Every structure is written in structure tokens, then in C-alpha cells.
Amino acid sequence: METPKESRWTRRLPRPLARFLENMGRFFLMLGRVFAWTPRPPYDWRELLRQMVRVGVDSIPVVLLTAMFTGMVLALETFTVLLRFNAESFVGSLVGLSMVRELSSVLSGLIVAGRVGSAMGAELGTMRVTEQIDALEVMATDPVHYLVVPRVWATVLTLPLLIILADAIGIYGGYLVSVVLLGANPVSYLAKTFQYMDVNDLLSGVIKASVFGLLLAVIGCQQGFYTTGGAEGVGRSTTSAVVSASIAILIADFFLSKLLF
Amino acid sequence: MPESSASGAPKAQAAPATSPTTEPKIRLRGLTKSFGSKRVLDGVDLDIAKGESIVIIGGSGTGKSVLLKHVIGLLKPDAGTVLVDGTAVERLNNREITEFRRKFGMSFQEGALFDSMTVGQNVGFPLKRLTRMGAEEIRARVDECLAMVRLDAVADKMPSQLSGGMRRRVGFARAVAHQPEILLFDEPTTGLDPITTAQINEVIVDLNDRLKTTTLTITHDMEGAFRIGDRIAMLDRGKIIAVAPPAEFRELADPGVQQFLHGRAEGPLTEEGEQR
Image (cartoon, rainbow over all chains, first blue to last red; front, side, top):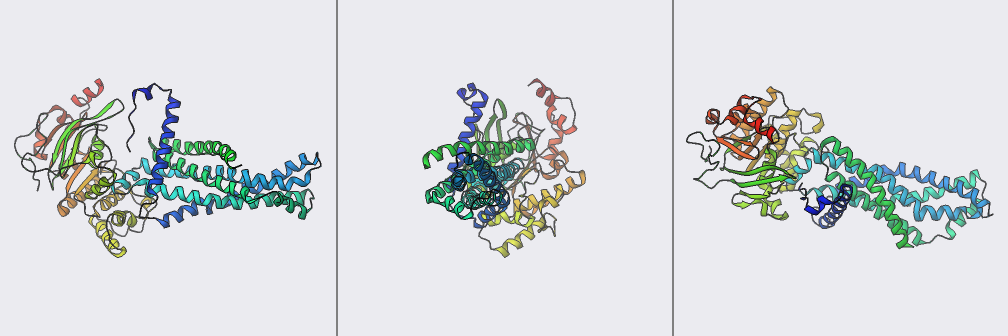
């Protein structure tokens, strides 16, 4: 792995800023390499499927648990507040729209960043420090093509599927609390849930999830790929993978919400 | 076996590390590389003849691994050139370097086996990526290569189930699987016990004899260097300070070489190091 030379002006920058710019540069470089390598053969479908199982299927329990409780808490909180305005019949709409437009995708994104982004950082980081990535290059195999491309596309494809499940479970959690615990009318609750929801709401959540998937996978892989400094370096990469991906998801969420409204 | 300038009087310091008679397989000229402010390679000149086994020795941090990584194009020099069969490695683009690397087999310090794959899949990996062999052919070749490094019944094991010495040997098997023209060994015996070290050295000698490849080994194991090498070159502070066939190398008057050979704590190698 070649490290770019420090020029005179980069040396004059404050260290945190220089590191931030370096990370941004590496992110876009990695993103570019992923897009450049994607259409080139050989296509490793088996690896793509394996990664989809790791990212998607293995994340189902934790994502669903999060969505369930988020829906439940949301119903509980909004019910007590809306009751003050005699508007408790809107709990269903509020829970439904919040889950579908915002909470499912952001919370699932953050959970998957913690679970999968960190694993990518640690796995690629270990491969880097034990020279496995060098070994790939030596055997005429581009490591981005072989390792990063399947991980990125697996995450981009499976995160939207995960959040559709999370939407459903979140809405069900809200329904349980409202109907079973707080005694709301089940028929009118469900009717209200879908009354103000349209396809665009669902779509905006799905689009967000894809973008979050792209961000967390590229950042996780990038942090691992550029690891230096043995076991300590792998630890650093893993932490940065989660922290950077989480921040990126939250910032991207704002701009996507602005764009998709 | 070597077609190099392995004859003549012992050479040291100013001696040319070159073979003037035949076109070398690998030619390094003025190879210079710095990391930050530290100059790791400082004008390395070396010729390696076809079929020759050359060993580069030197202390830790003298730039041996960096030199090896330049030969295979994992690093690009700041100045100077690496010519392999007359091709300047540093000028190759991404596509060309992929083709170029087919000539090479490289074994890494700790083996660098892919830990998500079995031993058999590891050894078969270059065959799958670099050749058009079918699954059956690959399996046969994997068994053949594992036998060559004196391992059997390990193909279905995971690398984590093997000892350090076995992992290195699997690394060798993977390096030779696609029948490369040039073999690179990066510190093949570091951190192993003396008996395993001797066994590994025997395997390398055996591979050299059988395959007749050009071999470049870096090590700081002196016994191994004398056993493996047709010529030994010593790297210190990023420069080749001596190069000679094993028997002559022992007799070199260079105080740095003598310090290294006898493992003395005090001498020109360590004095200069402290001054830096």
C-alpha cells in the first residue's frame, strides 16, 4: 500500500484537519475504485451472497428488536402527549410515518454500522496487518475488487430489505402498545396508520437505507484497508469505522430528508 | 547453477553487485525509497541472474522487506529502477502489473494465509485466479505442492489449526503452485525454533533444486543464508555493503559483515545506527 507523500502545505495544516481531509480523500478514492471495479469480471456471486447473509440475515434479530421497541416507545410517548390535545387517534399515523420515513432507516443504519461496519474494519484491518492484502495483490488479484466490491453491494442491497422488515415490526410494536396496553380501537388505529402514508414515504426510507448501506460499507472497508500498526491499528480502524460511519449516516440523513421531502 | 558473477576475489563495500556477462533476470539500479524523513533504501544496485538463489541479509529495519516489495511492484521507488526481464516495474500501469505478477510467487513472513479459507483453497487460490485449470486439476496440483513442502493430510484444515512452521510451508506451496519464474521469500524462518528453521531451509533448498527458479530470499538467519544462497548480499542503512558467494562471504574483511556474522553488539553497524 502506497502512502501519499506529505506536501509542504499539508504539513502546515492542523493534525486533526489533515487527518479528516486524508480520510475524506480515501473515502472518495475507495468509492471510485468500487464503482470502477464493479462491472469487471470475474463476478464472485457466491461471495456476494455470503456477504448478503452476513449483513442481512444475521442482522435480522438485532434490527427487528430495535424496531419493535422503537415502535413501542414511540406509541407510549406520543399517546400520553397527544392525549392532552385529544388527538390520540393520530398515534397510529405518527408511529407509522416516523418509522417508515425516518426511524427504521436511521436506527437500522446505525445498528448495522455497529455490527457490520466494525466487522469489515476489523476483518480488512487484520488482513492488512497480516499481509493477506499484499498476498492478494501478489497473486494478481485486486483487493478492492475481491474484498470490498462484494461487501459494499451486499450492504447496499440488503439494508433496504432489512428496513422494510423493520418498518413492519415497528408499526406492529406501536399497534401492540396502543391497542393492548392503552386500549385504542384496533381497526381505527390501523386505518389511521395507513391513511396518510403513501408510496413515496416508503420509498424515501428505502433510498435512505441504500445510501446508508453504501456509506457504512465503504467507510468500514476503507478504515480496514488503510490500517497500519498491528493489533492496535486494527482496534483503531474498528472504532473509526463505527464512529465515522455513524456520523456520516446522521449527516446524510439530514440532507436526504431535505432532498426527498 | 548461478550464471552470475559468483567467482573472483571476495568483494566488499565498493564491489559491484552485478553480473556483467549475462542479462540478469532482475536488475536493481540506484533504488531509493523514503518513508517520511527516513530514507530506507539509499541507492541499491544489484543484479540477480536467471536461476540464481540470492539471499539478502541485514538487521531489522535495514530495508530488506521494502526492497522485496519493490521487486514485485507493491511499492514504487522514489528514484532508481527495478528491471525484471528488462521491464521497468515502476512504469507498469495497473493492468500491466497484474500480468507481470504472474511471473512471481511470494511467501510472506507469517505465511499470510487467508484465514477464511482452508489450506487447500489457499494453495489453489493462485491456480483459480491465474490459470484456466479445472477443479480436479487444481486439487491434484494442490496435493503435489503440499507434498513438495513435505505436508500431507492438511488440505482440509484451516490455517489457524496449523503450527507456525506449517503455515510458512503452506505459504511456500501457495507461492510455487502456479509455477512462477521468480520466487520471493520474506523472512521465511523468523520466530521459529532451530529445528523447524532447519526444516524450512531444507524445503527451500529442495524447491530451488527442483524448480530451478530465480529465488530472492531475505533473512537474518545466517545459517539459513549460507545453506540457501548461491550468493549472499548484505544490506545496511539502505545500501548493499557486500555481496559474495557463501564461502567467500565468510572471509570478507568488511567490519560490518564480520560484526553481523559473529553477532557482536558493538561494531560499525550499531555505532552508525546510534549516531543517526
